Amino acid sequence: MNPTPAVCPAWLASLFQQAGGVVSFRQYMEWALFDPNHGYYGAGQVRIGPGGDFATSPSLGPDFAELLAQQLIELLQALPGDGRRLSLVEIGPGEGDLAADLLQAIHELDPELMGRLELVLVERSSALRSRQQQRIAATKINKAFMPPLRWCSLEELAAAPVQGVVLAHELLDALPVDRVVLKAGRLQLQGVVLQNSGCLDWCLLPLPEPMAEAIATSDCSVPPADAPEGWCSEWHGCYGSWLQNLSAAIDQGVLLVIDYALEAERYYTSRRAEGTLMAYGGGAAGLDPLASPGAQDLTSHVCIESLNAAAASQGWQLLDQRRQGEMVLALGLAERLHALQQLPPQKLPEALQRREALLRLVDPAGLGEFRWLLYGRGAGASSLSLKAAPDI
Ligand SMILES: C[S@@+](CC[C@H](N)C(=O)[O-])C[C@H]1O[C@@H](n2cnc3c(N)ncnc32)[C@H](O)[C@@H]1O
Image (tube, rainbow, N blue to C red; front, side, top):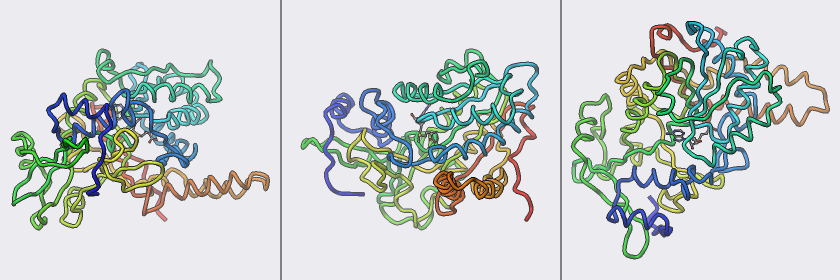
């Protein structure tokens, strides 16, 4: 990590002082991302898109949503329905691009389904909720065909649980994580300390007993047997409480997680000696996580085994998993690229821009490596799967 002292802004210094001057990294990440007045997401500082802090698949243009819509329609149509309204729940919609473009695509591909659907958006940040409202209001769908639309928390949804499809696109990589460090042959918890100089620095804290127990009984080798002194990585205790809240909100349906994810054996290796934590800001990656809290993103990869275990303990069964590159091919990448070649010459700039975006979605060194993880809950969902790529 960067040894340059990171000056702590006054708003955060006051939180540190109230907490006694030292907190876990997870608490620091929670404040830096979600403080309602100063946090990167909480206060709406984030800018997602090609000209922003980082680009996500939906922020590259509507093609991603148009491809994903085919998969979501298949899943929604396969749920038993029982005459009840189906819910499409997106958690962590960011700028609202995916929700808006999915609505447009479902409206065009399956108007009958649109009439049985509601869109539920779950967003922690009130600043982002406003941006999502504006983005969705700008869709070209005639008001008469708009499905019911609401923003609520998982806790509010739990009052009247819904059935349908839950989408978590690049959500789990933003959940605050703990970090563990191997020091003198044993794991310790990574902390952050506010020094007398007013700067933030790393420190070590005792590993809480419940976390030590959870690590010891998990399917993950943390630390790996050949880990060097100082080896550090993330621990995702956050999945359990999030999935518990989700289970209370959904009585039947599927959860589609799309995110940076690694198998535990690739996550927890001696070669990955600093884990997967990254700080992003202004289009740059690899920044110091303690610098500019509230003005930069902090993110870590999903650990697949940890997520599977937390999901199973909350009644979510892993149904299927694929890489994004494979999914985009299965959903019609080739046909789309071909159709772009047929566009008239005056649409050449649009065709080139969309071609580049489509190729980024399958780039094996980037978004193509994203995982699509499908979990099911309830008898009606147990036989569902993701669309398979055609045999070539
Ligand atoms: C990395 S952004 C992804 C945005 C969008 N899904 C995309 O891919 O462009 C993470 C989003 O999740 C939201 N978020 C993070 N934790 C959340 C939680 N526990 N519940 C609801 N939203 C959350 C953030 O405010 C933000 O909108």
